[in-house]
Image (cartoon, rainbow, N blue to C red; front, side, top):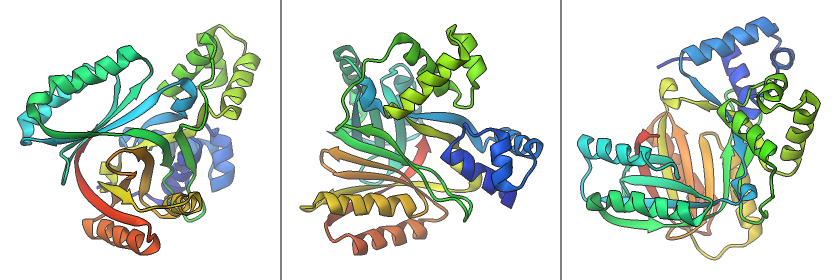
Length: 311
């Protein structure tokens, strides 16, 4: 387990909110030198605490549908995990997967743009069907990722990664090219993006601002390897009683400011909500579940899963 010092916590918290922040701006906020900030970022990358600098896309704006699939396997062992992971690698429509213990053994999330991709999703499920006892398929309405706040000075930020209320935008090939570059490395600077796209820096900057204004890009944050910080990923699947929009807004705000909750998904399916949570011990997870039950009487049932491996 790697312990973060106070300077590392401050820098990482700011990168979680906006990983495109230049070193000189981070330096002003943390009272460090720009050179010191860059050294800390390199150190966190070398320690594999920062895996990647991510661009958060609201995929509804690009015309995608998101389908979570929850699977109960006939049995689960290392060989089956290895085989299923090999199958998943062959299907780009599977955006995320996790093996876990509980009511389900495997959770998948598919990002689907076309009928052809829907067939690819189906083919993956066919390819692993010999291992499947049962499965539940849902469709996402809203999805949010929440920044980690490792410092008392920074409030967690909410990134919308799916909103079914937003219509698809007709993006230009150059806009899609800019998105793809930033998805590969959110800290790529404007001049390099300009060279890669054969556009001027001014045009790139203008297009980037427009993508953010149109809610295509909801923000930029780090991908943290929480295992290096000794966190245990857990999942809560939640069924609801009758509720109103105000109650859901209150629940989303609770998740944003309650430490440890990373993802919140609203969906149509067997479960209405799905939370992904990082805790330092299992007791902390169950205490959080009890608090959620007490705070929100419209919650009918919570099913808990403990992660084995994350994609």
